[in-house]
Length: 317
Image 1 (spheres, rainbow, N blue to C red):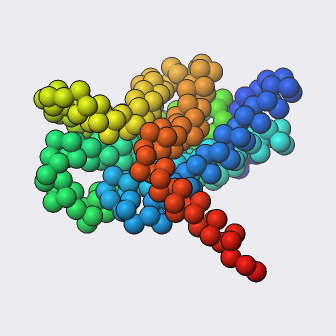
Image 2: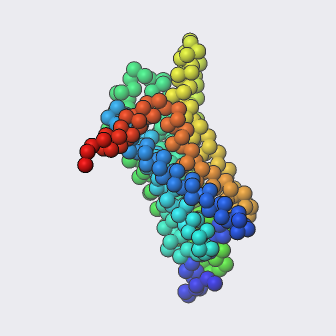
């Protein structure tokens, strides 16, 4: 039963994945496994890059930020879902819902911009290899990373300023496993045209513009690769950016599919499946995509992290 205070809903009920008890158990085990592996993978990447001096370069600097973002991202979406499986109670307070929405939007927007910056970094490394150290010094990489985080959290703050002004009179049932913009806009009893316009314009800036930057960077990269005379040079250049391109395709395709027509998509349970892809599966796959193909990161992990563990274990008590 929803709590009302002056006609305003104080809590929402997240439907999650209503299935049979057996399916509930299987889903709980699946999401818990993904959650723990994602935490472990991304934490190890952040630790490896931080401890390895040879990886203190812009490419790995941005990768470290991406892994740190995924650690935060996964903690915004999965813990509440796991708790709902355990307690069979998907209720969340209005303040809790808005707080979750704020961080979710901020991290999603940050990731969009960060992926664009990483594409630009790959463009400079492949198309301007001799000038790369001067074009992408550590100071510029730091400023670009700060701009990614700042733009993401600022965009989220602007969106929430308009969404938080809306009233919710009932019903309070959200057909999702976390608080997202589209479900909240569909439940409001206020005039939501202004909030929808602001959401659309900021989504255009934070999703479409970074995507255009990614496409432009890879178009230039492809043109540069085609000019390389040897097949070995082609393979080396492609391997340099293949991991990032795979992440970009998965993340942007699922995000655009979900938010291209948010109101229509909300009426279908397919929306939740697609949301699982970019909020849970992508953070899980990113470390594997980047590191399984990157010999330098794998070697650094073995020498720095595993090496330290063996060293400490060999020290006599």
